[in-house]
Image (cartoon, rainbow, N blue to C red; front, side, top):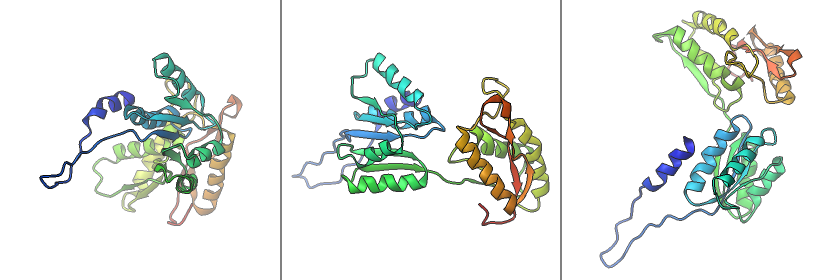
Length: 269
């Protein structure tokens, strides 16, 4: 649907022409940018790719898609399907590789635009590479922290708690908009936290092929260690209320329990 939307939208782009004197002719022409590099992360590998190659192809550009080294297969399959559908050779290209491949795209003089989704630190590198080469256009979607604020006039604490829990634990919390920082008014704090703690076990990690599973595996062992590192830091700054341990250790997957901390410090990690 994402690609279909861009295909339908491309001929509906509006614009304005500045007023000119009667003896002048003002025109606005729309032309493809040229070569668009798209560097996408591993947490939503196909969706993030579609958000980038969809509008780029619809506007008549060629695309070099660089998937994460942790999730390259969906991009490769996409390219194969595009070729089968009749997309001309060289229009959609997939470049698997590590960070140096993305850096090369940012610095390449024949790339006219680069779209990157990932960490803020790498976003700085992409912007510098684009500026140091040919001042290519840059589109950055970077990491962040999305606080969820619950006030005492909340009409339905049960519904709010479920919405909050989903925002925290969706996709195993592996997303730049995960609402894992909760700011709850002290007047409803105890009641609201109790509801969240009741819901958290529903996100216990399970078999990713089971329709009953609401939380799957983390991307790899390195991510597990990173998450557990934050848990260890949290023990020093806050009170652990639930979770915080590895799960399903005998499964061969990379699982961590849904974790809840009570932290009164505004400067905590």
